Image (tube, rainbow, N blue to C red; front, side, top):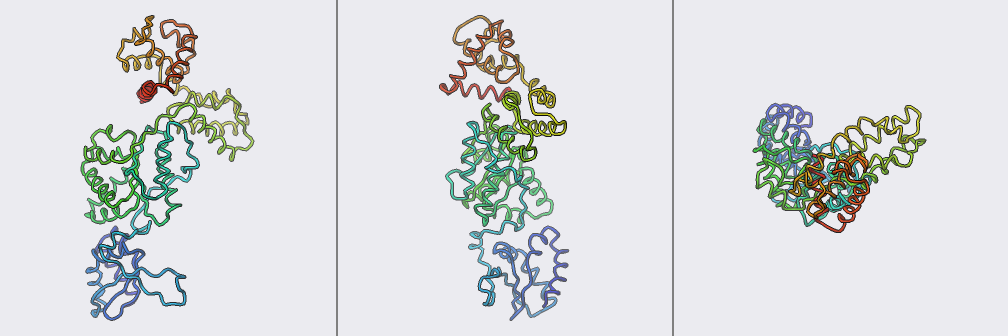
Amino acid sequence: MTKEKWGQLRQRLLKTVGQNNYTNWIEPIEFRAADDGIATFDVPTNFLGNYVSQNFAELILHELKTEDPSLRRLQFAVPTPVGAGADMPQAPQPVQSSAAMRAVKPAANTALTTAPLDKRFTFDTFVVGKPNELAHAAARRVAEGGPVTFNPLFLYGGVGLGKTHLMHAIAHELRARRPEMNVLYLSAEQFMYRFVQALRDRKMMDFKEIFRSVDVLMVDDVQFIAGKDSTQEEFFHTFNALVDQNKQIIISADRSPSEIKDLEDRVKSRLQCGLVVDLHPTDYELRLGILQSKVEQQRLNYPDLEVEAGVLEFLAHRISTNVRVLEGALTRLFAFASLVGREINMELTQDCLSDVLRASERKITVEEIQRKVSDHYNIRLSDMIGPKRLRSYARPRQVAMYLCKKMTSRSLPEIGRRFGGRDHTTVMHGVKRIEELKTQDGQIAEDLELLRRALEE
């Protein structure tokens, strides 16, 4: 038996086991030698060798016997690394038993392809503020790679609030700190696609072995498996298998587990058994911090461009719902200023970003805010904007004025006119009062957060 003969036999095995099994399990093994009735193969990991031994050994031995009938069994071994005793013969390291195999960490590239990671999405480039500080701290903790007290970590929030950035940052950090760990990051859609493909190709055992052999499983946008019963079933069993082995799971979604419709109760329960963290909509200070950070990055490409005072503050106020839109606006602004040879001032900003600013302004109106606030506090709209000064009306009125100031581009006098013809000083007082109360009264802060989210949907 020779290596050339093994090359020919592999092509026959390809036709028998199919392209997927061949690529994942047969192609990585290399024929070493045949001696005393034993054919020895080099394998990259114990895991792969044990899997091939359990699932393909009889088929491989049958093919080998067509060339050398004296062969009785196969042996799979991980070769000693080059440099480990160069003057000594490299003795094979036998593959462990099935029980021991479960404790072996397979190499990160063994039959696994992780989704591409954006090199820009690291912890260094993540701007931390009050709305995301808990999510950032939790992500940092699991990225250390050691045991944690919460599993899974479930991150949720609206579009453009930093979920995917944190997921990529965790994966980058784990690979840097713990390169020996098998980290798999993918979207829920990719999980579903692989599951359906395995069902179609009748390779569910391969699917189960691959997904249950990881050290860290990261699934983005898990809401996409809602309503997919078979995918949920497999996800549930994969989840349980990994948790039972103390493997870390990190999940993201656009809403909390309890709010994902058509998600099975047992899956919801599992997702909520760890730490569930909400990435809140960004506040003004955080948006301004993000813009300041992005300006420093843009200066690498446009070292001669300066941003006039007030421009970043203006953008942080006006573009409030989505960080991606905010960052895209700044990128466009720098490119436009460079192309036309003008400085970045308020006039250029309004010219260049007129469509973005119009869309932002058009999204939320004073009337929408008034209706949402009156519904939230269960009072009539006419009472809230009317002359009555009862506390049960005055406080919701101030909340509505505050939201109008923060979420629309309307001036104080215009807001006052929409609230029964009140003076702009009344609006100013109301806004200031809510600013004070939101740091002192947890209920007011919660009301503002709920109302903001409802308005931004």
